[in-house]
Image 1 (cartoon, rainbow, N blue to C red):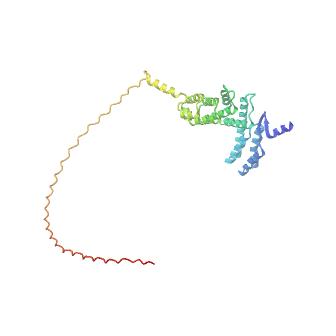
Image 2: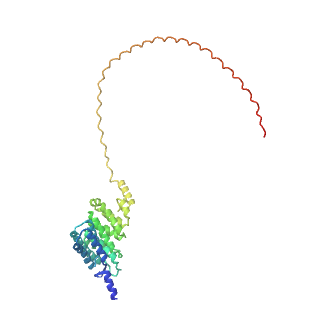
Image 3: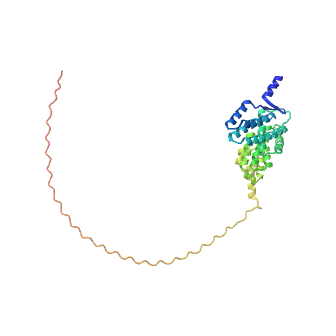
Length: 327
């Protein structure tokens, strides 16, 4: 039993009862080699890798931190700035870890270290992009209404969708309500993010008319698909009701259209008479054509002498019959 426990501790870092995948020597060596290729000093690389190892020791996933180190090295970011970014990510992951522990229901099955690490990374990203812990708690309460099987990853991706919408300048309260409604009606991670990005792209429309987000939330609660929300400019009202409303509006006796008489066209000014053109001088008469003198008659052509008759061709002599000799 002791050997099994030692093996478990070697494979996973354990902190507060949460298992996380251990940072392997191969991963450390690969990141160190990448830094050396970029001209980073060994001390800089040790400090960066130490932050990932310290986070892992506290039960936090190290993979997002390693990814950030690789990204910073590839982009040529200064080592000091990468270190600051890692500190900020670690702080957000600690907050996300505490929020996920609040959202966990006792007695429910534990998720795998990989799934929990991915969920924690998504929630930490949402916190880093402007979502507050109180907004995450409010999302959790709203998503859990009538949905006892809500998963932690649903909360994480709802928070990330809220971050996207807030970045687009959309009202936070209505944005939170839209994400909660979409989560309760079974939208997966990709669907939540697609909806948030679609609404962010139409941010000016919702900033001008915040009530339109309420219409979107109503449509989501009815279970309408995202592609229909994109194509329908009035998703909160069914088409048949809109037609009836239009008929009622047109048939109301107290809302007659005012008779707007068209203004009379201005009279065209009378056309001034043009002065009479002066008479042109009369053309002189053409001189009479003189008659040409008559042509003299041609002399008669003399008769040609008669052509002599051709001589008669004598008849050819007949050939004697050919004698065929027999052998």
